[in-house]
Image (tube, rainbow, N blue to C red):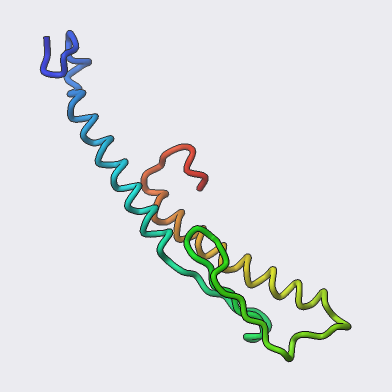
Length: 111
């Protein structure tokens, strides 16, 4: 028997080494996910009329709307500005996550 406990050693593959590498990768991914969750992302639209800040889990932390942009006759514009600001902040978070977690190339991470 080989050191890995399998007859023939699967062509010299050491199962203990593979398990250690998998555990290290899991720890690295967990650490990267925690790091991403602690980050914040900010976006403004309409020349600063709408400001949004989200965390790495894409939950809104702060939303500011300048009084000047609140027009009862044009609610649709305000809605568009808010949506654009949120989408941009979420895109920043997604890009950061793809950059950080993409190097692990693990199916199911949703990147």
